Amino acid sequence: MSDVLTITDLVIGYGDRVVLDRVSLSVPRGGSVGLVGESGSGKSTLARAVLGLQKPRSGSISIEGGGVDHPVQMVFQDPISSLNPHRATIDIVAEPLTIRGEGTTRQRRDTARELLARVGLDPARFADARPSTLSGGQAQRVAIARALVARPALLVCDEPVSSLDVSVQARVLNLLADLREEVGLSLLVISHDLAVVRMIADSVSVLCDGRIVESGETERVISAPEHPYTRQLLEAAPRLPLSTSL
Amino acid sequence: MSETPILEVRDLTVTVVKHRAERTVVEGVTFSLARGGSLGIVGESGAGKSMLIRAILGVHPPGVSMRVAGSVRLDGHDMLALRGRERRRVLAESVGMIHQDPLRSLNPTIRVGEQLTEVLAFARIATRRERSRRAVELMGSVGFRSAESESRRYPHELSGGQRQRIGIGAAALTEPALLIGDEPTTALDVTVQKKVLDLMDATRARTGSSMLLVTHDLGVAAERCDQLLVMRAGAVVEAGRTAEVLAHPAHQYTRSLLDSIPRLDGPRLRRLRTAADGALS
Image 1 (spheres, rainbow over the protein chains, first blue to last red):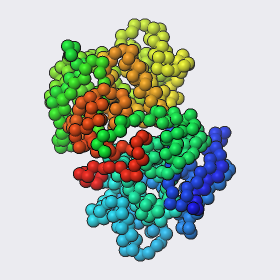
Image 2 (image 1 turned 45 degrees about the vertical axis):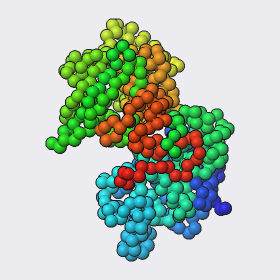
Image 3 (image 1 turned 135 degrees about the vertical axis):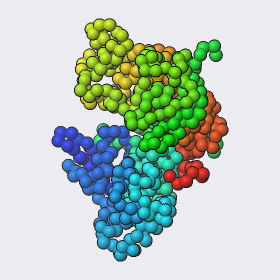
Image 4 (image 1 turned 60 degrees about the horizontal axis):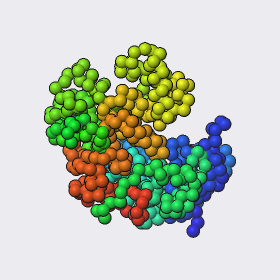
């Protein structure tokens, strides 16, 4: 299987400070990779670098885009503030097509309606809604629809559910899992939460102080962590007893 | 139990009046917290958790007027009957409050050590010299290794975890009978969260205080509290011993909350079970 994203020996720094130190990571086509780290680990810098917003000091990032202008799309932590407050939902979702000048206005709106329906928002109810009238979960669905309309080779999700309530979080995670299966979406999921990554990603890299300290199949990393920092993360995570209602 | 509970809340109802519109945000909440016990109040946004705490403390959010009905007995005092100075005296003596963002409750222009001496002044610790000594001692007790020099730092020079440790130290300073944490670890990384929660447990073990822990994180409440109160839309949907509630949730809402949390143990789930009832949110 070919890789959509290949990061090789990436180094990023500001002045004397090295934020990412020889980071290597790849996302296979149709695959889902998690990147776990705490504040200051460099995970958001890595997301910015993948989007081309951060210039590496050395190393390389290559994206197999399949000829699309913007092969990487991003979903952010705070969905409401990532949406233009003055525009209707349907125009927000259609925006990447508008920028590319693809199709007629009507065609673009039809595509946007399809995508709203795809992420579970009834177009009849939500097409004309403004972001301020949406809940956090609805806004995150709009952000996902807007990202998908651009037909990206890779979707980068930076803490996609950490600002949402757990019941809403579960629905957004299920949506991402559905989209992986149905659209063959390739995902890079950045999160502080190993349990979220476990559900959504087949493999995971653990980032600590700008270095990847451990990588592997998600289940292996969680059940038999090799690096002391990974163990520390797992031990610190609050646990619930296994539900008996299953 | 022969001792009176540290906190007894009966049929508490809070109505918020804003722009002439009335809204009931807490409805008929009843619970009691035994001395030395710990109670976790859990729920999602809009459950009324913070308003419940505000009503217990008698703190109104700015620009909002609140009508509180029912009864709140704190350390034997009828809180809703007390006014002004009397109520503040009871709160100062009996309650230590730990907020979500300790930076907001610290003055950014004053060195942290001095802020602690102010707290000590409130607690009627006599001399300035003694207050400085106690402030450094306190920072040492919440894990600052070079407390003497760290007490001369400003709040922004400390990490979130360090500021929250100071918040806990300040809250526990007078050894209040009740510690209230309002999402005290929500802004922190998991490894820091664990240290802060461990510190709260250690503080309680030392002072014998009870704890009311408000959190959106069921895992945190499950690990740290012996009683749970699950709230939704201003009302209590389920209450009981933590182990019992988690093992045999009686209410559908509690079950759906438990199902929607991704787990690190057990079989790997490809989809989480979500509540079938609610409108898409």
